[in-house]
Length: 216
Image 1 (cartoon, rainbow, N blue to C red):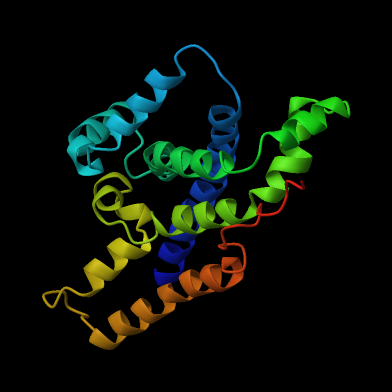
Image 2: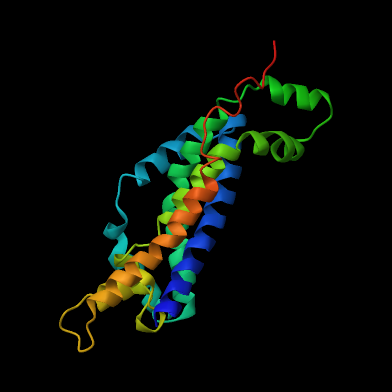
């Protein structure tokens, strides 16, 4: 069942990456470029929520999953994605917001003068300049759920074993078919996606792409 566990973990990581990147980028753009009522309160609330570790909500997550029948089902995997996304988005919004605040606002004004809408500004100007921080966010979002054990062990169930749970179970010397070589081989294989993602995105994890965008 190693391949199955690998696919489940990869699915969770990919969906989490897509959700975190999209929502963090859009919200980071809104918080860095616009003024609206309650902006400061929302930022302070997100900062406060980041102070509490995920395992503090373990019991609540378990009761919710059990009440809706998600434990040991494919819906439980999607529920894990939702948990990882909501836990990662606040800090990534702060990261993206901080980076976008470094992009001169005169670029926005020039775009508005040329007739660009806010959507066009975001799509054609801000996004290309924000590629480094988007790449950084994507790498973090991919790695966050990859080897998480506690949530996946309690909420995914035995029918949807992820790679972290698989490694834990195969490393138990009390099981009948315990094989340390299988454990070491599995640990080596699961490092491959992380290596690939880091090599593919390292050229984007370079700060200062927006330097020189504002010409005197």
